[in-house]
Image (cartoon, rainbow, N blue to C red):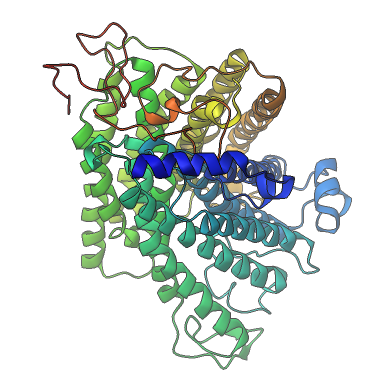
Length: 595
């Protein structure tokens, strides 16, 4: 029955002629939607990186005229000197774009869509229509977020965490007006998009696995996407509720987050609310969000390392257990962002304990990645380099997390550049490395062509050197007490000695930013001129490499392949080649490996 239905579906797809609009714009094919997510996320990433480079130039050379500021910021940079208010707006929109629109939607949206049906042996997502709606909600929210730069009073300027009262009082400053409203609307639509996508991913993994694809035969990529989607379903509605309550405080006279507010000596009528309540609601999503960003990258890196080490992934079941442990612990550690908010010291010690506990499953993963490549026959292509880079930055950034997770130590460096250095390394750079690794590895599956390997090497080495050049020195200026989000430090003689360090950081940032142009050129030119890909260019074992190079809606012509073994049969004794695909039946007397 199943085989007949599969063949019939493929036959129907073959005869159904698609128009340009149904194929490239309002597509319900998961592979096309993955490409839409990737390209939209890339565009948002370019915007976010440009903002960060402007912030770095402002910090390195404050109050010096800059033609770039004048060209890009217009009235907010009279005579090329950046206005103080727009600096905080850049911080706000840069953080929002990179965390949500690039690392959440761009990374998870791209690879969950591309790989879930292909790796579990499904024709498509459980609901192609909801999948399409999910992408277009993401696109609309991206447009609204960027459009806030074009409103009269300027974009939201309350920091990416949008703490009240700056975000709750429209009259507080220019960026608290229409720009803040657009931020809230964009995020509400983004959350709707994320929830639709996450529900689709979970239902697809549970219901649409092909015959023989048990949960313990799933690639670690699918486990990571599956658990990430569950975290999103649990935590994103909390941010939505916070945003809705904030809208009510702004527009309907309520007082959820406001109390005893004075503006120019005048007492406002708000009473009874608490901005700390908003912090709890925000960080209840905000910390799981870190793992919504990093878990998909961990899944991609696990797959790429096994493939390019020509070895089975070390500790497959331990890796699954650590993903589940990280998912659970990520929802009970949010208070470590609030150690200086007047939190009860005993409660602080509870959050310290749960925060330090999360180091255990993270260390299990790091150990297993290192052990996977130990004595492997390593293929050092760009995807593998970015995967190794991921492990490096994840460990480096994770070590500083031990300091920030301890309530007694965190107080000394809270809201300094030490925090920026920590979360950019452990979440920002690591997740970007995972994303780049995934793009270099699965580009042939997405576009049927290969990326230029030499340009990939250049891209990796410049990016890796510049990433450490930017964020490693930030630990030291943070320990020296330099506060974040200040648009200039020239008013504080205490920090004069740090000016040279800030300039060095900025130079590394500019070089690293320009290096991404190499990647962009490689990405877009290879779509048209790259070397044509063969069906299984990396000699991998998972099901996506059994589909034809030319995309068809339905993934496989004829019957969907059945699965007979786990995902990591590399260098298995008794076989002529060093990989055995999942759809190859076991030989007589052959045992299935499960590490």
